[in-house]
Image 1 (spheres, helix red, strand yellow):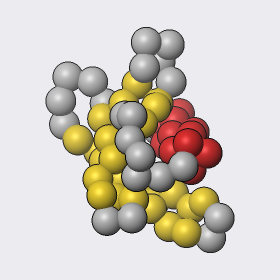
Image 2: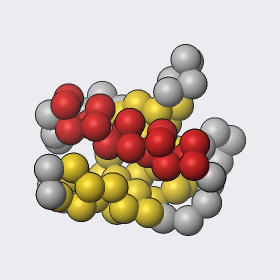
Image 3: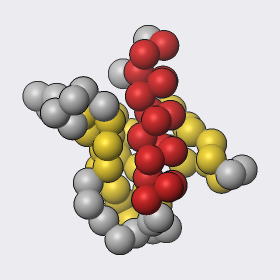
Image 4: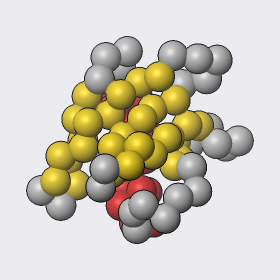
Length: 71
């Protein structure tokens, strides 16, 4: 899988896939890397962090999930 960009509130976030056992993704938010991966229900979710608001993390996770479904 290649890197891609998601847009939320006119801001662009670069999503970098990370190789490993399960699909993981790295997104730079406010200068800090936040990792996203599939939860037990199969949905993409962010690690617990105080770098960004929960609404931003959920919106990015939803867009990552949608992008994965298209491929």
